[in-house]
Structures are given as structure tokens and as C-alpha cells.
Length: 89
Image (cartoon, rainbow, N blue to C red; front, top):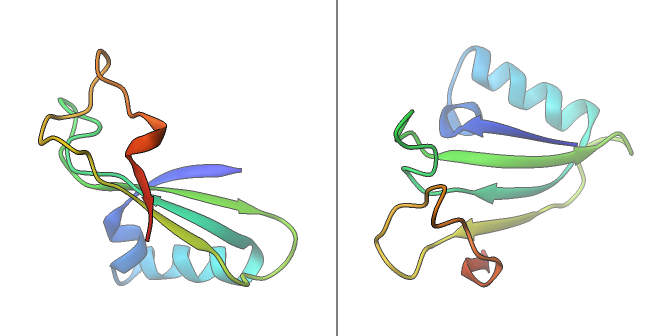
């Protein structure tokens, strides 16, 4: 399964911290894909993350992938993310 969350879910306090704790305690969070600001423009410029997890048990080890576009152009419907623009962090 996968879910899109803002950065605050990974680094915030309060409710965000509880959500993160539940994910790590009850699921195997195996991959985080960090998306750049503006990927959901014009709706929001908040940086977001894709969290991939399964029900195979508690969190073990995961990979982190950053999306860093070669150009400063924003991602949008007519310029989607390309596979070769991802790097393993």
C-alpha cells in the first residue's frame, strides 16, 4: 500500500508523531519517496512524501528515494516525473 503525506507527518509533533509511531509499530514501512515542493501545484507547494508499506510486521529497514529534478521547472500534468529523475538517498 502507499499513502501521500506532507513533510509534517514525518517530522512533526502531536498528531503527526502519533501517526508516524503507529505506522512504524504496526506496518513494515519499506520505502519513502520524497517529492519536491510544487509537485501538487497549483493546489499546494508543501513538500510531500510517498510512503510505501505492507502488513508483514513491524518496521525493519527501508529505502529512501529523493526526487531531484535536473531542471528547476515544476512538475505538472504536461511534464510528469520521469523514472531517471529519481536518486537513491
